Amino acid sequence: MIRVAVAGAAGRMGEAVCAAVTDAADMELVGRADPALGTTLEEVLTGTEPPDVVVDFTRPDTALGNALSCVRAGVHVVVGTTGFDPAPLGQARPADGRPRANVLIAPNFAIGAVLMMRFAAEAAKHMAKAEIIELHHDQKLDAPSGTAARTASLMDGDVPIHSVRLPGLVAHHEVILGDVGQTLTIRHDSTDRTSFMPGVLLAVRRVATLERSPTIGLEHLL
Ligand SMILES: NC(=O)c1ccc[n+]([C@@H]2O[C@H](COP(=O)([O-])OP(=O)(O)OC[C@H]3O[C@@H](n4cnc5c(N)ncnc54)[C@H](O)[C@@H]3O)[C@@H](O)[C@H]2O)c1
Image 1 (cartoon, rainbow, N blue to C red):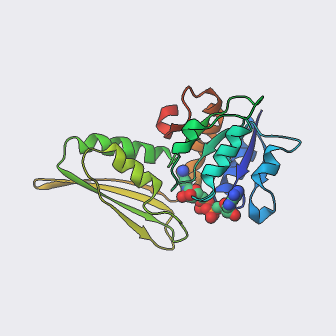
Image 2 (image 1 turned 180 degrees about the horizontal axis):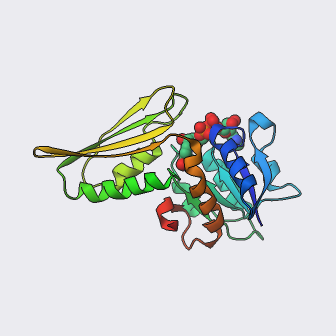
Image 3 (image 1 turned 135 degrees about the vertical axis):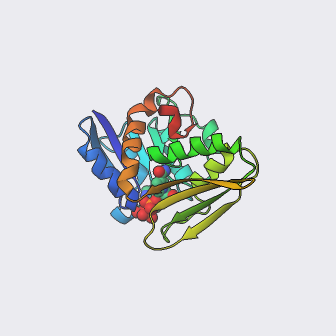
């Protein structure tokens, strides 16, 4: 059994991850950290039943600190939080006597979104210009989305990103490529947060075996 704790357990994504971990036959939910639940990540990491893996879906201003705490504690961490600079994780080391711990960061755990990124990168090699429209619910803290930024970074050329925030939306990305007399549109829609769960569970199962840390992108596990 993989012992899993969730940071941001009371949030929209965190609640979905807690449910998915509870339903997974090979995992045990051993901790739920969230200020809204009165439990800190430090308490979860140092408790009587420490996790093998932490899954972080928190906020852009807390994700880096949480991931560093996990690595220092020798606990693998799967990060879904977007909108922060992961560079300091390259130097993160476990505290004395703690085992090596890996970091997997994915701006999007939905398989369709991973495919969208791959197809957009391929299409950009063949078409003159491209722009991205990303649309999310109006509680999302960061803009542009991590997925849009990652998609643009994988594409040739300068790719402007337009952000839409409205109630009723979940997570939607549209890459529009233009060339003489034609356009190509590649679109992915997450209409429900369950779309992310198979990717999150895959990351939990595989994070301990990563050869490089941090690893960025679910595509490295597929
Ligand atoms: N990678 C993906 O596939 C994917 C998919 C959807 C959302 N996201 C990202 O996940 C993050 C969370 O999204 P959400 O909609 O669930 O947000 P949310 O606001 O619903 O939940 C965030 C939770 O984190 C808690 N929190 C804040 N600081 C904390 C800390 N230091 N330790 C533990 N918990 C803390 C908050 O109390 C809250 O309950 C965002 O960055 C979002 O962009 C990623």
